Amino acid sequence: MTKQKKIIIGAISCGIVLVLIALFLLMQRQSDITVEAPAPPREVTPVSLPPPIPSTIVAKADLPIQDVRQLAESALRDYLREPIQRKDGTIESAIKLNPGALTMTGAADGTLSVNISFQFSGWARVSKKIFGQVIQKREDIEGKAIASLTLTPTLYSDWRITAKATSNISIQKADIEILGITLSVRHILTELVREAVLPKLENLIVKYITNIDVKTRVAGLWTKLYEPIVLNQEPPIVLVIEPLEIQAQKPFSDGEKLFLNFGIKTYIQANIGDVSTDAAPLAGPRSDLPHIHFVDSLESGYHIIAPIELTYTTIEDFAKPHVEKAHNLKGIETFVENLMLYGSGTQLVAGVGFSMPSLGAKGQLYMLGTPVYDATTMLLSVTEFDYSLTTQSLLLEIAESVGEGIFPNLRTTVEEKLVFPLEAQITTLRQKLSDVIADRPIGSYVRLHGTVDTITPEALYLTQEGVRLPVRLQGNLTCEITLNTSSSP
Image (cartoon, rainbow, N blue to C red):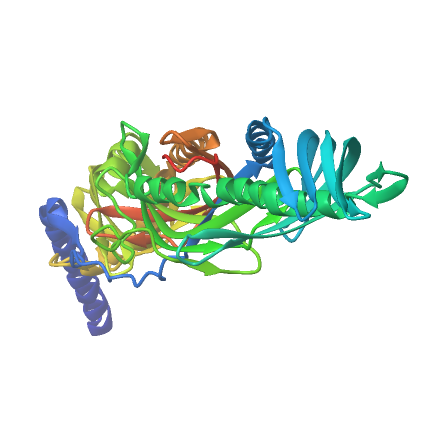
């Protein structure tokens, strides 16, 4: 055997020995393949939330003009039950005024127009000196008159209501004849109505307008708004309202009603269970009813941020049956167990334990991903899980080569299974709010009416306890305030 052949045979022999040694070591260390990853810190990044958006609850107070008309008409008839006697120089009279139907309508600027017709009857006695003798003549009088009145109500910032009235009277021809001489008593009747009737009519209507107890009604609503509104008992869903200010338009009318409309600016937040919106806390002590801030128009609408929170435990319990089981990854049976979720920074951490019996490998894997919400499917999921691997194993290269084929598939499996539906929570929240505000009495004189027009998810973020998805509910809230012309509440 040549020297060259000996060298070749020796090299082959050494190679075989080295391979055998490597296989021996592999067989001895196979059960010690442990893939590890450092656990990310359990601290979430604080989220700066935008300030709350004020909501405006429009309180519509209206007074049927016919209510004022009926009260004024009834009081005026009582007042004119007895004849009105009057003496003006040489003319003495006793007149009975029988009021007809009183009409009252309103104009767009809030003024009220009043018209009332009168039938008058009675007598007039005229004393006239003729040829040195005083001659008296009494004649019956009959005629018609129409009185008109314009009333302008004014609402002040301190809740006072006043009314300015102007009136006039129109009397048809009213004459009497004495000894062939025709004398007009129209002037006398005009002054009589102006001095004895119209002021009374003005005072009656002004009284009823100024006694409208709108302040009492709005103050009751203002106080009631501080009381939390329970939307649901279990889980508890509660609306918390902070009234801020009162806006109002000047009084106006549609012809049949006198309107006093107000806008109550508020902050509204929803608390679900022990979860609040994390917005600026609502101010502390209740405030008394403020003065009015007048505006040209009122824009109703509310903005409610309701935080839907899923605890990490809730998501874990939902996902575990889908994750903690055997998976076939690249032909290798892999058992996943001990799913654990928590927040780290702005990412969701999914920690899983796994084992690969065919390779004798096991370990702990931590994956970091970004939680997202799909508004179309109403699903919470995690995308773009990433991870890093370290190992103390002597077979580092083997573990890494295995990892490139297996762990990306494990990551994909966890991403696919870690999906949580939110449709039930969102639908329940919307329905509960709709039911409560659709038609709700607030005290004895106020009714709340509202709609939920839209519900929009805001930016999802993490807390120490779970994943939080604030949703913005928007719609309209109006209050109908029952008014009367009594000063009593």
